[in-house]
Image (cartoon, rainbow, N blue to C red; front, side, top):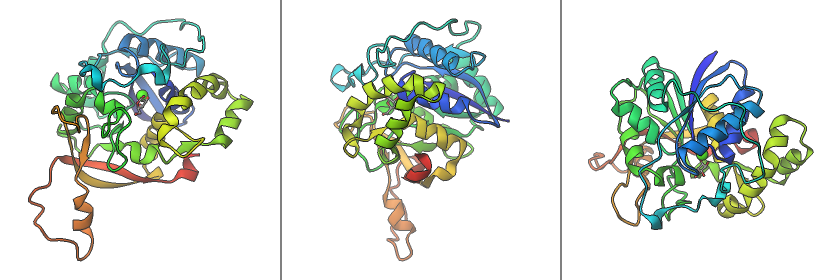
Length: 311
Ligand code: BDR
Ligand code: CA
């Protein structure tokens, strides 16, 4: 089975992603590392324990990681998209066991990156940046990350997606690392398209699986705030799409483009600056300007998604 390590900030669409991953054959989720984002890292770790237990996979170890270095208050996204507890405040009981204490998220990530284990991130990139900075990682892994935006604008800030906005410095460090293949970015360009509609939400209402029973109420809470940028009545499930893409990249169409992260104090702070001019340059008869001013490092940016397959 393919090995995958998941880094998550323990929110509601993260829970949907973990449920889905737990149901995949030929996939071994070797560990889930918790990072602060929608909620602090401690709470994210607790939520991830609740989720793996509800998914019938209490054997998957959860490791505690970092809280992102706090951005300026005006840049903070209201945490209430996932409720105060990160899972919609629907009264879920505590997990039976806590996160593992024999290792930290950072040491686990460094080890797994060194081994070439594939990595899926569903939150800010703080843990991954720290693991790479620890020097133990060789970045032979395939990284799929939910975050950023090429053309879709932002959700946490005018041009910044929440996972990047929580820790732009970490995102810049991770994208700038020496990956053997370009990281795959699953950003708002595709997550705002591959939405859940009334049809999928009605299926949840029927609660015919543990995942549907668990997710129904939290997804309703989340949908009230998270659907703002989608077609009326539809809600994004960002991290679920990223999980599906990590397992099967054919769900999206990507272009390898230079990407930089704005880590300055400007209005574009936290933006993934995607050099879309490359697309025009690649077209037959496109401008031959020598590509002299391309900025950023190569990222496989998901620009289109097969929505029907997702649903
Ligand atoms: C991302 O931010 C979090 O709120 C979600 O879980 C997702 O990872 C979407 O911008
Ligand atoms: Ca998340």
